[in-house]
Image (cartoon, rainbow, N blue to C red; front, side, top):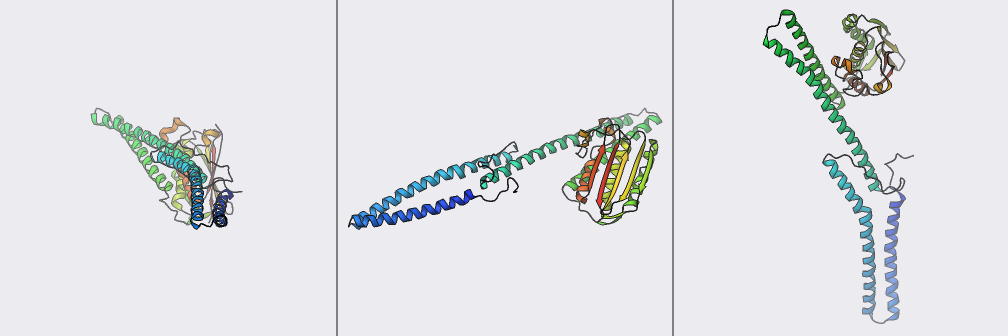
Length: 348
């Protein structure tokens, strides 16, 4: 079964060539027959030539008129609609939908172009919405730490603060600066990944050792929240990009710590033959199905009460990295029951 919107040239187009060919044959044949008939009926070569010429002129006029009408209906009209649609798209209006003139299976080239333009306009419309949302979200995320930095810097400038208050202001300024730095860094990383400016540099990576180092880097944060930690890490190596893999593990562990207030975090690595399977499980707040379907969207934060702890780009980065590396990620979660993120990366 052919994919809709990409049919080959149909028998309808081929039929037009047959009609044109038959029309030429009929014109030539009837002209010859008329000429022979006139030779029998009159001895004047001039009369014969004049009558034959008039017949050819009338027939040519009729055929030209039919061609003009056909061209107007089947060529100029659809071309005009296509030009109007492309003009709207050039001006930023993507709310266009061109309907094919023929039923599927009888598409001509104009029908295919119309469907392609409609699909293009639909995708561009989605991209425009995402772009607008992205700009709005970036502006919001940047304004918050900048406002904090401005307010607390003003307090420090005014003076009159005791040592504890001054230290608290400095800590808040450092935290806001770190959040702003993290936001800009993640935006740049995501932009490079989405524009394929980053290409995997594949080498042999000891995933077990990489995970152990990553877990140790979160040890202080885990202990500060009095969380339990359980690891079941098998020895396993993959041929992949170590730097990109670190982005995955760091963001998954960061989310697990962020959304878990009590209980434990479980990290495992299993050698599944063709793949290395990494599982990061927590006993945190979990999420519903709607939130689960959007967690890989840029700037989406299902739990807004924790918005100050991140910028909603971590899982978007994870998903893009996994797509580039040709891996898979799955999420299993219910409200109040924590979340389980499972990543599978091909070993070679």
